Image 1 (cartoon, rainbow, N blue to C red):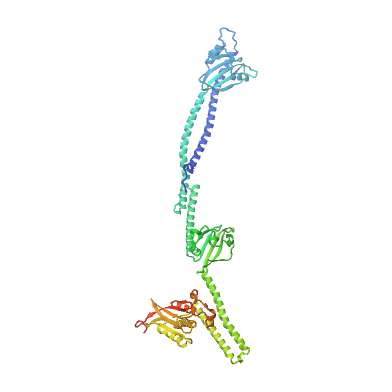
Image 2: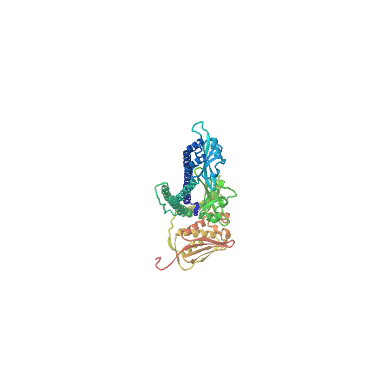
Length: 608
């Protein structure tokens, strides 16, 4: 928040407004007072002179109307001169007595003009109007008041003008007095303004100080500090505002704490979710994306934010943001490669206000690669089981129909048909047993009955059994060490594993071939080997032979009576014993099956 300049601050504005109001008030008062005082002084000045004129006007009229037959009597000019000398003349600079023909009869200051004609507008107006006539003139830089008063021959309606009194008075003193008064008023105004400014500053501080406190508190709040409080200076409106501001601070602090807690919860939820979450604004641009979503999409946060959601998901060619808003079903995003399948499922949820205005879109991304794989395996498993059961059932139905049609009477055909039916029945029984075994292992609904056995003897007994019962010309070669190694195993299940491996070796070994058996020690594990000289397995199919119902050559495997589950069962059982099983093969050369098993050495006293 930038600092407020001096002339823009409310403190200065309040003082200026306060001072301007005082100045305007003083100006109005001064103008009114000066005008009224000047008018009053002028009126008093004029009244005083007018009153003097009224005092001598009678004497002048009498002298003008007096009969001058007696030669011993003084002349009119002398008599009028005596009257003028008796006229109070503090402010009067000139007095003239003029007859009705504008002839000067007497003068107070200038005797030389006596007897001459005096043409003056003021006198002319007074004589013609038979009333007072006045004006203010500027002479030699000073203002003078000129007054002409008519002299009537008698008092009454039929009186006539017989002359006039012309008076010139120095009214400059009145204006000088007004000037002094205005100076006194100006000094008083300046003093009052100085006092007003001081009082205005003090008054403004009572308003601006709480506001400055609230400004500082607002700045502290913007930095996240809610501990400060605004001081309350009174119970007026500003005090109430300060109380409201402190209450707002408390509420904001509570809201901030709640928001921060919710933000931490949301951040923790988003960061610990296994699903990806992407949020957009109302224009469809990404504003939030969590780490799982970045991992799923193999992008960085910097390259994702502010990009359209359809572009981030790679759907911009098929869908627009408006399409995604109205999307009710989920969309599968296939990012699979030749080496690795990778499928995501995106679900969309619109963020809306109560008014229906769309604020954005939430996209939840879930990795369904394993689900799709399981679903595909399930479908393939059902198809394989159906196929494996349908083949012997179809064969049995054909032979049974032939027997039902009368073939049972033929002593040469009937035993063959019954033998085929029995063989297919045993094949279905084996398939069902294998499926039950797999089902138990998948559900972990089984228990291993483990016991310690000497693996050397255990392995040799199984090999002996196959060597004695083999019907083809195959040579067995053993690479079994003389040192005794003990393993803790479920003998029935491990026997089944080794039986399946040896049976497969015999099936695919040609006449005159060689099957090799042996095991070595690697750290704390026995590495068991069964190798044949059969047709081998293509390199790309080696890792798949432990999948359920997988066959490299389906036709030949089925002809040999296999169910396609033997190695899958072997894998489950070996892993249940804590070991691993795998195959190494070269097409046209042969195949070797390896599996590992934890062991113990035969130490004295351990197995007695």
